[in-house]
Length: 277
Image (cartoon, rainbow, N blue to C red; front, side, top):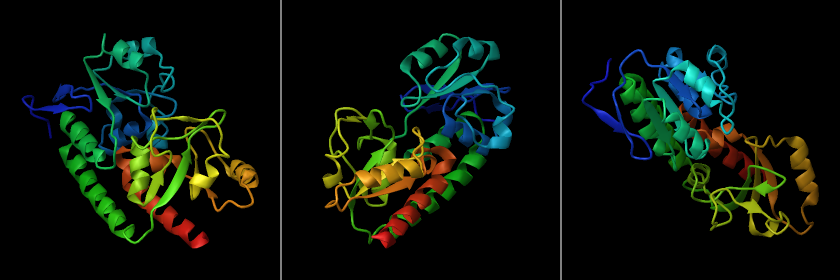
């Protein structure tokens, strides 16, 4: 279904985007949205991606890489002659979007801050690229998963968690983030309760252990693994009631179509950790 040229859709910065006119050439610098574009049936229209855009594996292999999410090769993108570029406020530096605006006709800026922001993503990309049917199917699946998670978390006691995304320095998330609001949906309130930065550095982990019930080690952007869990577990004070667990960072932080799997995953994880206590 070809979108009507008279209709416009707004991205997360309020920029208005008209219906795209085929053929579209899309460069996506946001891993989770690259996956979403494939799920909307736009894989053949992708002409550039980052090295972190790894899903779906069979599909992305044919799409040229244009650097990472932070160190984008602008000249390589220029040669690809995209009609559209997709960026994200958290994933990509502001200079990248500004550089792309000089030669890409349509730069779509994304910045979902809570689970329901996925609905806008489906409608935005489904609308601009004439994939309303596919977007509607994703919306229905998301709403079913979202409502099931809300019901499933109703009886869970609220807990305080420290969600770690980096070490050297230790870094966590503020409550003004998509990840934090995902975790809040299953009864996990991230600490600190207030922070000046959206991704604050922690001067010391030892001071945090007494303030939280769980320390969650994310598999991305830092690749926390079993060895890190063991090391931190040994560092816990003997008196501490804090526990440490690994969490799949893609499931916790990726929006788009991945959220349909991600929210139920977080609920399952919460239930499984409840059984360990």
